[in-house]
Length: 130
Image 1 (cartoon, rainbow, N blue to C red):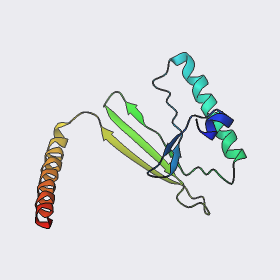
Image 2 (cartoon, rainbow, N blue to C red):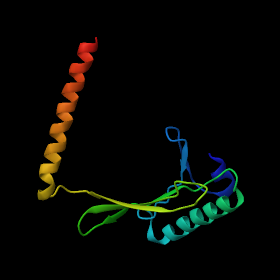
Image 3 (cartoon, helix red, strand yellow):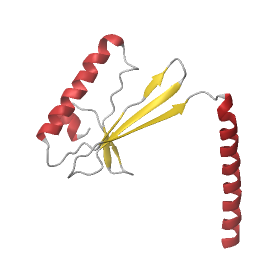
């Protein structure tokens, strides 16, 4: 159990690779009657943690994932604060198709072919180094 969860009731996950803490808020998978209360609790706890822990905790990124059910595209808007001193915001919107579309078939085929070629070149390089 993390200190955020003990002190503020905020569920968080520590990522060793990036040395960052992620605070997930899943509202789509929860029951409609409960989702607003659970998300409200997370938001209030996060708000309290950010206002009280000003020296040890810094918000540097907000990432949302939204599924559009009509065209099966996952939209991922990412809001970042890359510099702590200027507090300048950067907004990046990425999208990911969840179904293969005819216009993407050539791109997917090219990606698979390039992956296979790079894998075979890497195997050849490793065998020469041995």
